[in-house]
Image (cartoon, rainbow over all chains, first blue to last red; front, side, top):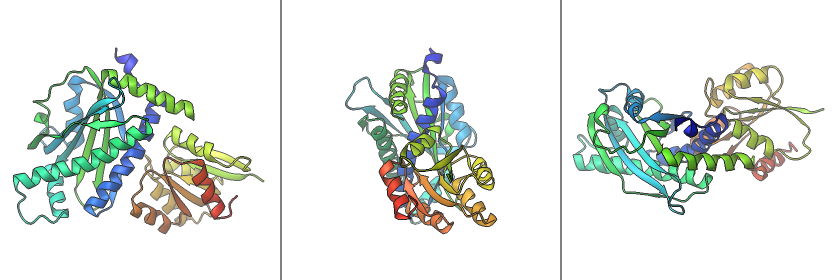
Length: 211
Length: 121
């Protein structure tokens, strides 16, 4: 099963470039919202097994005990019931969250409600721009389910503990947005499970054929 | 004589998109580089009188390449082709000596318009 899901080097390269373009659009939206310059880095793409997911997440934010807040949002192809689908998870470390509140000039302590609002706002900005960008390039119209807060100021190792995972392997795309001179970094994980990978691979092959 | 043209991007697909967008019959000798370090080496070797340069790359990014080209005094004409569409990204590369900025995904018409604008074709 896993072999048939693995991306060829051309497919991986193509997806990375598609994500790169979408990430640029999302970075621009976030930059406008925060009125700062966002540093972008090369997106990382790999196939993960279910039991590797937590470790991947932990490694990204600096270890299992790092405290984070996270939001998840499902996406699906509206014009094709068996098309691209997956989940977009946006994770902020606690230190980044303080920077975020600071940038947006929240005074003093940010209340729990204001925090939720802030988390959802940034998630909407990033997911909206990034997934739209990916959809346009892959000629798929993507819809979203409402975002859900996974946890606030929790250890990253427990962030996904109440999430139902109904896949064995998923394609993991990892996108980081960081700021210069500040400790802000926010990571977006796109997870596309099993049968969605097959659809993505076919879409990538079409793009590659056009070259 | 053919113009030494360098296409520097970490994505093979992006490099192909640029190559495909070049004006037909343009007399160039194309070299490809897949990161900033390779790109800079090619420029030092005289393979980049004209350069199409990506920004987000491993090893050395496009800003680093622009900076090094400026410091080392190479006369390359550099056009940045990037997905980083923040207005400040454009300002930064122009300050570092880029001729112009084209956003990704690149299309042939836009690329040729830019080349015409500067009398390069």
